[in-house]
Image 1 (tube, protein in one colour):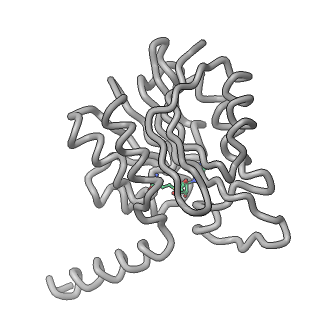
Image 2 (cartoon, protein in one colour):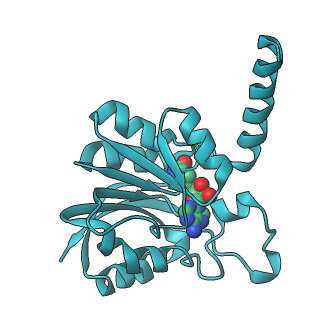
Length: 197
Ligand SMILES: C[S@@+](CC[C@H](N)C(=O)[O-])C[C@H]1O[C@@H](n2cnc3c(N)ncnc32)[C@H](O)[C@@H]1O
């Protein structure tokens, strides 16, 4: 294969990945801002997508950052960005007390089951009927992988039911403090820092 051919293969692969991987948006920017301010120790970004948030934390805070995503195209794009990244369903492969900081910008849009469209962008955007289909199992398990003085940085949209998410956080044994918040025409986005209550 010539140099030219492999470069065009790479460009084509990047084009395909861009189409099926969530690209950085306002929510990504807010999570990055909060993570750069609050992260410490070993960092995991769950659902890393393009790896943009993880890469910013790694470069601006000089911390060890790992990304994970259900979407193999996302894990590949994050690795292309220099982030160590694994294909994983939420927190399943990670061991007890493995991380000091866990970040997550979850798929959060409430989606009518009749309107599910069944591709990787749906996995990136849809939080099921309630908007909390991924947030619930994430909160139920994150305490397992979090070191005793660890922090979770969770992005929450007003579309997902802020009070309902606060109830889930409380049930999981965490106290929540807002780190950054921004309002847009259709939603307010907040990044909460969760620490053991
Ligand atoms: C809203 S996007 C956020 C992407 C990136 N973190 C950012 O902020 O730009 C949600 C990400 O979660 C991933 N995801 C969805 N379900 C997942 C699961 N069960 N386990 C791991 N990642 C998942 C999606 O593939 C997508 O990359």
